Length: 305
Image (cartoon, rainbow, N blue to C red; front, side, top):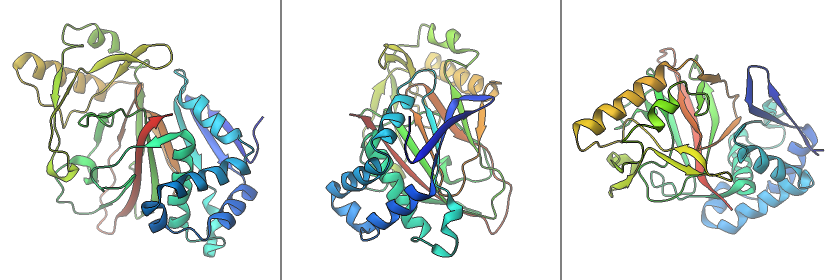
């Protein structure tokens, strides 16, 4: 039994759950956090737990239980949170972007503890996707498909989950989130049982990520409650040291991109997508070109506690 929200799954996307917060929960959350600024939650870490506790109390503890049970369940592990953006017409309660950051912060701290995001130097990163881009990674390149990957491949810390939020979307057609559960990947067994599956690969990152060290880990490992196969992979930041590694990684990338079980998920403005990073790969479909494109996204990633 849940309080203050409803949870359900959509046909053909049974592994992806949806949470819809009700109007009373949103209104009361805004009322109780209205005096807390974004700067304060950046400077004072304990305030992040305060707003998480406010949200948990409004849902009588059922939201934190629901989030954790879904995200740690191998058969699920993915959640879309709808913040009922239509309640924010004419800024009825508070500025939608401020609300979005506070809500996603509360939710992430009900799940666990966010890692430091080296790109931003904070516990979260906010970035824009526009018509033009001069960055050194695919993240901000709107008009190309962002290939399937997991987060945290190039840092020496655990990344159990990833939270992605759409704070703004103007003149944007396309750009849906792409998801593939590794248990649905048709070629999983082929690559998991490959001789290189457990061999350490070197991983690095471009300057914008602000991580200079190299890390070493295999593509596949065992983890989670049942010690089942998990994956850590991103094509752009892999640094193979020989032909065998290079061809193996290339074959994985090509197989993932052509798999027929990829799910496209449309996230509403101020909506949140949270996935278990150990057995879900994620990417982004290309966006239709528009010189007036403006998209602002937020990302948090962290560990279960």
